[in-house]
Amino acid sequence: MVLNKLLDTNIVLYLLGGKLNEPLPEGEYFVSVITEIELLSYPAVSIQEEQQIQKCLADLTIVELLPEVKQLAIPLRRQYHLKLPDAIIAATALVLKAELLTNDLRLARVTELQCRQLKLIQ
Image (cartoon, rainbow, N blue to C red; front, side, top):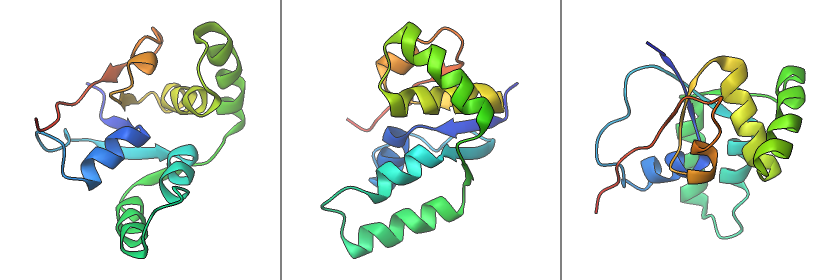
């Protein structure tokens, strides 16, 4: 059983927006530094939203851009034609040996990854 979970940016946004149909599964949670940057760099983010994001990130382990992640991201991007941020997130999950929680169908096609899609409130 995989206990480590890496949250993709879309899952964090759904979590913060109250759009997940059920609580997150048990485990230790991580996010890539890419997710941190993506969350905090939206042009229209309000001060309140930024505070909410910072509070959420404080409860997670942020994984910096490790050399192993960089080395894995390159072939993943080439093979699966991923955008660079997605390749880094995928490589981070592989380095951590973590399940990637994502609703991104392109990432779910990466056969090396163990991915889980989460149901959203309709």
